[in-house]
Image (tube, rainbow, N blue to C red):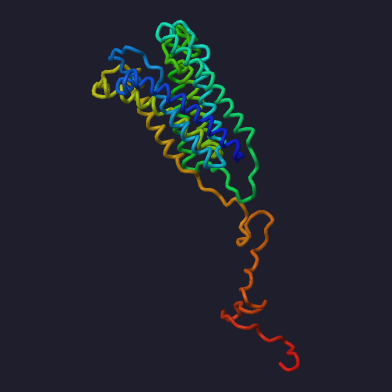
Length: 351
């Protein structure tokens, strides 16, 4: 999808705004807690007691990288509409629940009024910027300037199939765990998905069930479009794999920290499946990232006049005459050499 330069600049500015918002909250957490302790908390290693609770999660760090990449891509490529759309969609899914969860009583007990006020303002700005980014990408579309302007390329056949298998399977695993969550702890429903006083969550993040379901849907959608080799499959698949990666990495960190691999045989079946799911999530995300990092082969955007390719094109025309020579001179003769044309069948007088 080709977008105008004005739409690309607008989308890049909006992406920078979102990156600045995320960077501000990340800097606040690092300053208040320290990166080492923050990383341990993100990974679920809650043995360390914190004086103040973090407001961000590992997903915010990934979103910062995504926003910076989208801002650069929007300025450099005329075909960045899909990148703007996926950044806007992901931002909406992550920030929208904050509009009603930041003011809950559980948030009041954990975070100060100043932090909650700033978080609510940032949530409104992020939602508005994400919506504006999506609208800009849709409204700024334009047809290619000519038949030779390159359009976005989807993944190659092998990369599309690999991405489909990896992302779709990862999405199915996430959905299976959510079904298990509802069956095992029905008393937390629906707070697990829409937020509430019985569920702990980050100040700037969505409820855990909401985040998992939205990520699973994004993975399945990206996998299906990758199998179809759609032009928007690469940005959707790359973002889905990038957001999928932290959960698997943190799961592997917990596994190593608590020596679950050494005692794998003694673990309950559900814990064993959890460990295997974490490793699979990392492998699936890395496989999709590697497969979608390089665009697929691009066919020539216009017909080749020398090969006769393209609908309605006849045989290839003869090459033009050499400069400085009259028509008929300097062309190959029957013997394969170059020279003057043969004499006519009826020589003129004086030949």
